[in-house]
Image 1 (cartoon, rainbow, N blue to C red):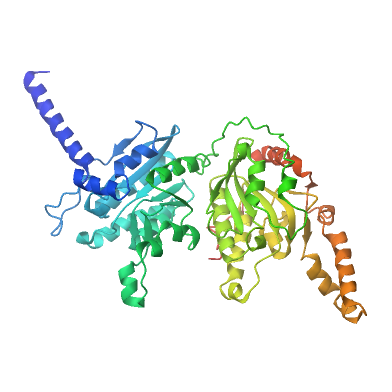
Image 2: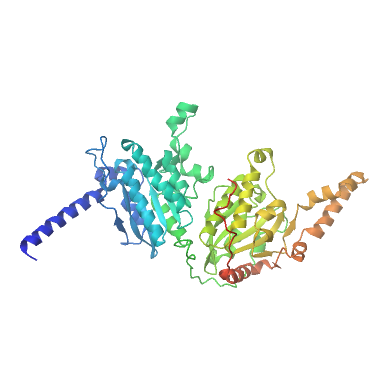
Length: 521
């Protein structure tokens, strides 16, 4: 290479490196300082914290905005979003991280195009997409172009749903139409105190409805994890949210074409669980923490509960059994006696469908008296919402195991994945009972006339309740009719679940041809 050529190449390389440094600097040191003062990491710091060290490869480095009357002369390094790929525990993931230091992370046409490009690559290569959201919203200066940018992202969120896992972290503002991208993804995580989501902000609400509300009260992490159910997990700060994403990915496959990763464990498959009898009292009226039952059975007692603060009467989350990733759905008698209501039905149905989309077997722990009664529930559509659970279980083709821990009554017996709803294996403890309703309610109906005509109605009623309880408040009637495969000793629960999961690994099931079903929404 001649000296002139070498000098020319050095000049071009220097220009390239200078441009790269400007992009990597984002909005500059002062704006980065303000980001830190607000308790937040910068876009690139978040990527470094999320991915394996040194694994990030950036894409679309030199993309710029389109310009236009209101954008001429405006600097927007990297178009306000950092995109690329890297690894988490050695597995490839694609990521975009909005840069609040550049025009408030606002989304314009090219910003949206960068996100769309990594989503396309993720689907072509079969890898999860992780979005780190921190944006003031649509870039108003670009007008309808910014809306088009959002459209590109929303369309892919929907079309790629169930193809590869999509995870959204809200690490700052996410307002207006921008909220619909995270809402279309599989999991939404939020940082307490620094993140919020809402369609219309406090000022608009104040002017329209006269309600006075803060950003945190309107759409903070606590609101969406406890009240609205929009978010699935929350953590104290950016670092904790990013660590939680890494934890979540350990249960998910790369794509719908793959099985979830197995996790080695020294927890013996045949470990006995005698402590379960200390947790679950045979008295059906005694509450207990269902999460403790789950932790006693799964590998190493590790259970990642999803939406733990929302609709607490049902528990959903991920664990491993014999090294295999499983989705857990369980009634929680400590809240609303474990009944199913509108929020619980929505929460469970969504989780069931997520597991089915990504080949994660379902294990259901049942202790349910029925659907929550009440005028408010009926008027708000418990029929429509409860039907979502029935639909979700019926269409799921992954291995499905149901364990009846205690009671399983009425329509909720079916909604919690009975044999008729497609469960592959149904197990029960000796403490369980399957019936249309509990002994007291059933006796009042069946023996109503006898009780009313008796000279000692209360004694007759008590006698008939006890008689009904002896005859039907056990699992053997249902087992005798083939609705339960086996009644097992609680201490052998883990061994039985793992054995049946291994048997079901080769399960194949296809549904009748359809364009798509019409789930009640």
